[in-house]
Amino acid sequence: MRRRIVAGLLALAACAGGPPSEGGAFPLTSATREERLTIGAHNEVLHVSAGERLVFAASRRGVITYDALFRGWLPPLEMDEARGAPTVFAADPTEDAVWIGSAGRVVYYRPRIDYAITTAFAGTPQEIFFDRRDPAGGAFVRVGASFVRINRTGGSSQVPLGALPAAPDRLGSATGREVLRAYPALEASLPLLTRDEDLEQWPVSSAAASPGRSEVWLGTRGNGLLRVDPVFNRAEHLPFGLLEPGVGALALAADGVWIGGIGAPGERGGLVFASADLQRWRWVDGPPSRPFVGTRVNALSIRDRTAWVGTNRGLIRVRIEADDRIDRWDAMSGLPSDVVTSVAAGDSGAWVGTLAGLAWVDRAVRVVTPRIVIRDILLWTDTLWIASNGGLLGMASSDSAPRRLTIGEGRLDRDIAAIARADSVLVVATGAELIEIDLLGRRVLPPRAASVAALQRITRVAMDARTIWLAGEGGVLVLDRASGRSTLLATGLALSAPATSVALGREVAWIGTLNGLVRVRRRSDGMPP
Image 1 (cartoon, rainbow, N blue to C red):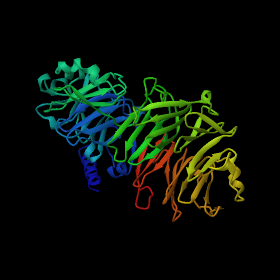
Image 2: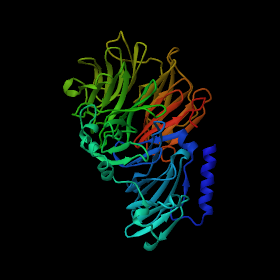
Image 3: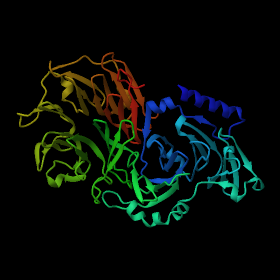
Image 4: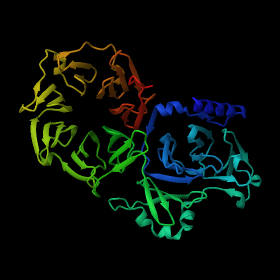
């Protein structure tokens, strides 16, 4: 509440200070951002700037902020990529804030109170600096041959050339070349400092030095942010965010979530781990052959520090704690199809659903059911449940092939899109219908009143003891299992793109979308805010 009040007071101050510039001022409601936070790809760092305490890194997607004093990440500022990437970037010399210039606008952002003000004008900012004699007076922004002064409430005014501070009085962020020139030994060590665990060297895109501390921050083209001790020439990798814009699949971990991408062209690709508090991130992209580049992840299953990854190019097994060693299977290896839609890890291998059948994979591939489209699978006790284009199937450990669930319900013979289970209830989703089955009583439960039409087409389902989450092109529909109440997180409003996957933790829910990862804080009843 305090943050919301502060943001409101700053917005009133902006209005009281005179007519706003084109584009005006807007507060970021911190309560909303904490309850529903979107994270995109931030491994391609364009600019870095450091203040007394906070370090800011700009990517095409927005700005990430690292607290250098307490060694922790603050929530990111996700921006509209359609407006263009930041062209200039400068930490404020008097406050924990940053000035971000891009085509047609400058954004003043204070991350600790989640507040931003946009000042719009014609042209593209090319330089941001401050008056050393009056650093609290706002920022000077060069646009072509003209200069604009912008204050912290969004007001702006043209500045005649004769009124500009002289060159010695101009305070601005040092360029990357100037930072490296100040530490000659550091520049000579860059090939070693920017090398990752796979011995791949990542080019430096930007650099900044912390005021008053012997600390350098390097932005890279593809490997995020590095903190460097220039005295001892030691580097610490600080990953944050995704490796590509969209999310193809999610898998819940004990302390966070694993994320697979959509195979966007030109992106690094790989698996990403994010802790629930967003403080710990890990990027796994495999050997130099980069098996995840251009590869869409359709399904993820994590078991015993091994990730089984279903993709549009076959099945990938990643031993996460064993030097990220990778094994691959595809149609040439015996899978019914290259397109893997679902994976369920077992004790010694994994069940794999594809567009052309079901298989069991350990060291080799054993095809169980060919010539059937598998949409989703889940393993419960000794039974594998299968969503297929031929309906709902079940396969016990003693069976040699799947068989239909015989409960006299014709709707279960249709094309099934997704399934999920909690306690003894199995949820079955067709493209436009939700069916709940009591597995112990072998009966279909009464239908719920909630309509799933807004989802347009159901793609995935997640379920726990409290709620059911249905993902689709129209967003995510959340159902309270006890009361029947429903909440829609609609695409275009709560979500910026269609949902592809959902993973449910106790306190947070993770939603994968075609435009990034969304973390949703859950209320005590499990519903979203």
